[in-house]
Image (tube, rainbow, N blue to C red; front, side):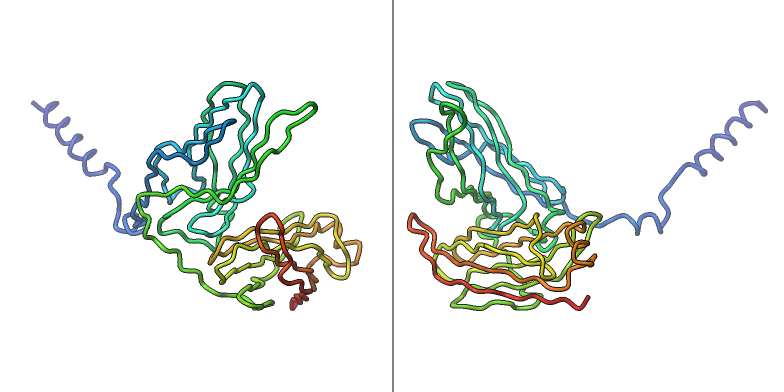
Length: 285
């Protein structure tokens, strides 16, 4: 009887000491609602060489890395390659890509990826559309030969009415006939210093904004980039980078001034120039 009583007391004691979340632990847990959008299967592109289909998938917006599934069929007797020049969510250019190589007369499953952490300005509540502009290539004598660059191809979701509200911030550097550029500041990591820029097209014309020349602290660094193709009423974030090694050549470890030569060109076969400007961005460093 004593043994039974002792075992009962031990059991009650252990139950009382079992790990239960405290009020503080409960309060510390993030109170987030899972945000998802669904893509129904839909045809993205088709010609006599290939067919591209967006497969049914669910995108969890709380995940840093999001995947969109595709199926690409190669109808030709040569290997083909598909890769995206740009990717946009809700008409906002983002860091993401689609890339695939498909063997002759075969079908391959692939995916595109988008990184939330690389687009900190864009806090998505939902996605109404995913847009790509694709380079379509097939194997030539020595290498892949691009036979077509597509128009902007759009995939819709089950939330087609969502509109992303762009927040104007930073310093307005250029404002010409509805084409605008803001600078959002200078940043540094272990290897590079960079200026983050915001491009905006507020017209009803497809244009390309391209940075043709970059000068950092009076020096033209080896590693710079920045251009973007924009559909109407869309925005894009891009960066202009300079390695710290390059900046050390002009006795500097941070960006003090950036001179950008910006070209605005109308989209299409003619790529007609609309405007060309030189912008000087100076920092307080």
